[in-house]
Length: 421
Image (cartoon, rainbow, N blue to C red; front, side, top):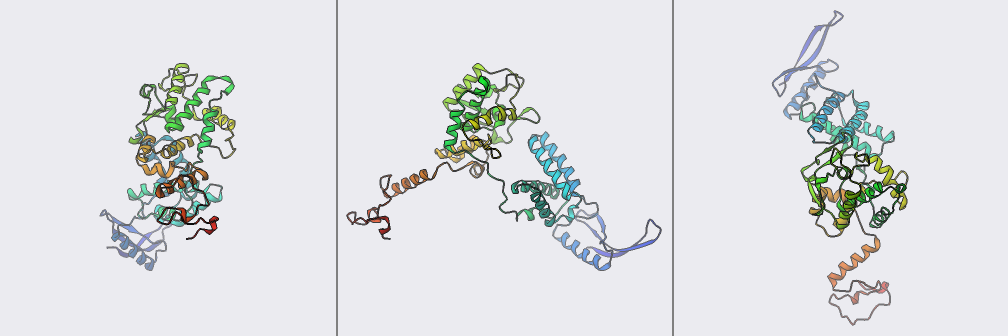
């Protein structure tokens, strides 16, 4: 139990000082002392009651020696660095976390963790929005603060969850879905990539064909395509064995992020033909042993591919819009949606994409593939199967003509407005 007593001491100026303090034993058995800001007895009594309640509920964090958000940020970054070294997270994610932390520390770095409230979090979020950040970007930054909060709670620096409480009110600010291709747009891309450009050089021309087709039909990420080693491209069995991904920050090959990322992806015949042409005409032996090395035996960077191949391709087929450009990653989304559209089980689609859980595939990668006309035809076909009707139905078909137990010789209504219930 906590107790209140008066404490007296001599200040630096030699004058006597006194204040009412609360003394107690924390959950670890350590004897502690806390002083209310006013030093008054009534405030010390309130503090004693709060400490006793928090000790009972296992929520107490001592104020003495408590750390600030900035100090927590430094510890969390070191923890993140260790996770990068252990290959748990990618350097690119570490860089994004560091960027988020810089924004967070600039706003609330001075705040003690025991004094961090939902108001601090909401004010920080609002500051990001008022300074031009999109809603989903600001929420992503606050999500990094939540990771810091969870790290602190596990290590006893915090007991409550003000960030989680504040984020529950950030409705309608989820991360925006990637702009995806329709079937017709991908058809234009596949046709456009077959037209030689790039000043007549065949190396980038054939490389663009391979990249676009592998992404659209096999669903590989860009890093997995440029990280594809020769021994993992099995042209005889028509299989891509995904075992590595290229990291542009460390300039080395890393294993997939998860166990599900180790996967074997079948190739359609035309993709095999393209890869055979590449290996026969343009493959260059290189230090990393990757299939798609450039003319100087170096790995193709995403920036170079984007500038030399991707943007010119989008422009050539009329899909380029400045400020709202399609990402190359959108082809992976298309591949997932196309597999599902063509009847592949969702669990198999998730396995081919390297997802450990199919709900990730469904919630993030699955997109509508049909236009209104196709949906009308699909609805008619489903209704026809149920009612044993021909697949195409006249819009003026009356209810009496549907075989649901009525007389098929009943008179037909003149127009659709005369259909009886």
